[in-house]
Image (cartoon, rainbow, N blue to C red; front, side, top):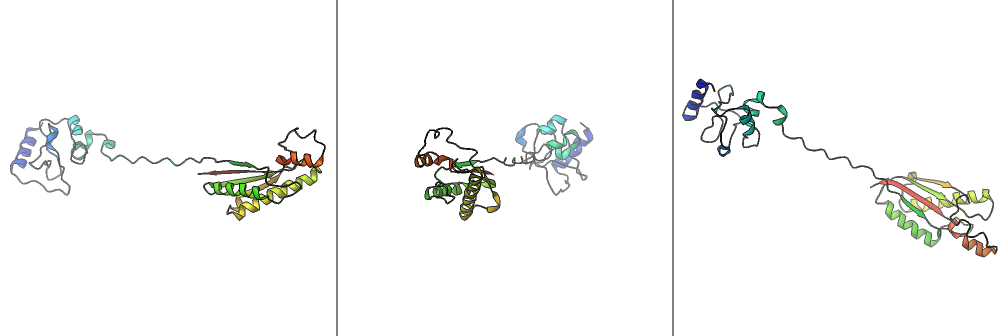
Length: 227
């Protein structure tokens, strides 16, 4: 400790005039050994050029350990060359991670949507689509794919067209319920993807066969989006 610096500091605290600064460095004396001279208010004594007067207790470690009333190490204001710069800067707020997109897939396979050889929605089919439209309202929709299907009765070409009309019927209904038209894509699979398998193979009577193949007359709707 420079004895001349200490004596000058003591004089400043005990009665000599102190320089006035825009921002006083205030210390709570209850912290114990204070590395800088303070007056009765706990204000660090400084020279006219802003130099903080060190006490005989001063060490770089103590200057970093003792905090001002704002919680900042005294060294930050008095001896910045002895302390890492990052210790004097306020902590940067943690950036909240951006919400990760989550795919939300809603798949509807409704065997009650259509009658045999029809592309007109049945009342039960409309109720199912109403439920789907309500779910879609809670999703930031990216794409909706409506895939139509037909049973195996009839020609491949006819059933292909029928499956496409069924997909379009579902799209039209969803749009009427407020679903964005430009998010809905349709496709027809004809009779290529039956869900009945071979369970109806032994049925010869036409009416019974039509009833057995009812699950194949459907549209599968897949909704992909984020919440």
